[in-house]
Figure 1 (cartoon, rainbow, N blue to C red):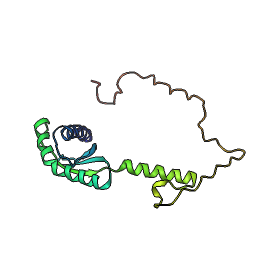
Figure 2 (tube, rainbow, N blue to C red; figure 1 turned 135 degrees about the vertical axis):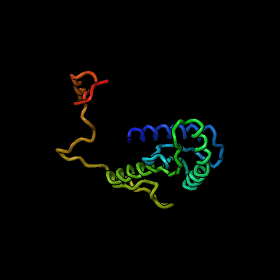
Figure 3 (cartoon, helix red, strand yellow; figure 1 turned 60 degrees about the horizontal axis):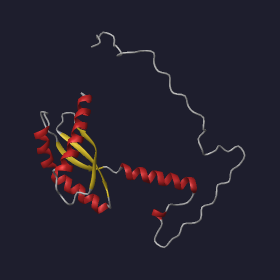
Figure 4 (cartoon, rainbow, N blue to C red; figure 1 turned 180 degrees about the horizontal axis):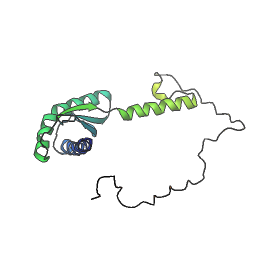
Length: 168
C-alpha cells in the first residue's frame, strides 16, 4: 500500500507544480517550488510542501495565495488524474533549505570562531580572523588524493527470487 501512496505523492507533486506554473495567475505567488507531497493512507488529504524564495512577508503572501488557489488546483487535478478520490490539499511552507543554510553557517562559525555578517547588528564590524596554527601530527584539512576503487559488482544476475513465489 505504501508504494501506491508514494507513486500518488510523486504524481500529485508533478501535476500540482505544472498547474501552478501554467494556470494559476495570482501576482502574489512569487518564486515557489513544490518540493514534496504527503498524502494520508486513504488519500483523503494531502500536504503540499512549498519552498519559496524571498523575504518572510513575500513567503507568507505566496503561501496564502497558494492556499486560496488549492480548490482550483484540486478541480484541475480531477480533470487530469484518473484516481478515485482527489485529496483535499493543504499548503505548508518548506523551510529545509533555510535551516540547512543556518546549520552550515553555525558550523562555519564553530570552525573559525568568527560570527558571520548576517548575525551582526548594524554598525558592527567583523574581527579579523586568527589564522589556524598547525602542530606536528595534525590531520590535514584536504582529503587524501588517493583514488578509491569502485565497488565490485555482484555476480548474481537477473531478478531476485523469493521463496514460494515464481519469478515473472
